[in-house]
Image (cartoon, rainbow, N blue to C red):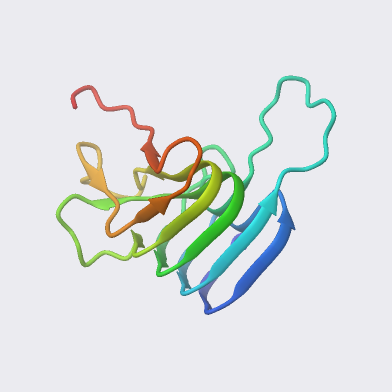
Length: 154
């Protein structure tokens, strides 16, 4: 999805793709709920000149550096059999457990990191804290979940 708005993507199976299963770029008011994304593999590239080929099951406003989205809801999804990253998504404001930014998702058998959670650039409160809720990760080869942030204090 690119430059889309008011989309509900629910109860689908995305299986057997190369590079990315579902990519959300520069979007607003997107709901991704109850989907299964599996068997996303890397491209057959012999040489990539030391570059990074971003690969993942569900990338939400994470593929284009500096991209910004609003009102993205990623809930109740399963990713499995993925190379590199299961999810890359915005977290929610700390203590706001009613948020659906990223909730009730599962990453299984990811050859890499289950989820990369990062702050929502539209949020005025996430400069100090953000979270992901009810996330489950198992049989991932690197990390269950990681977060990259630029806080001065932890």
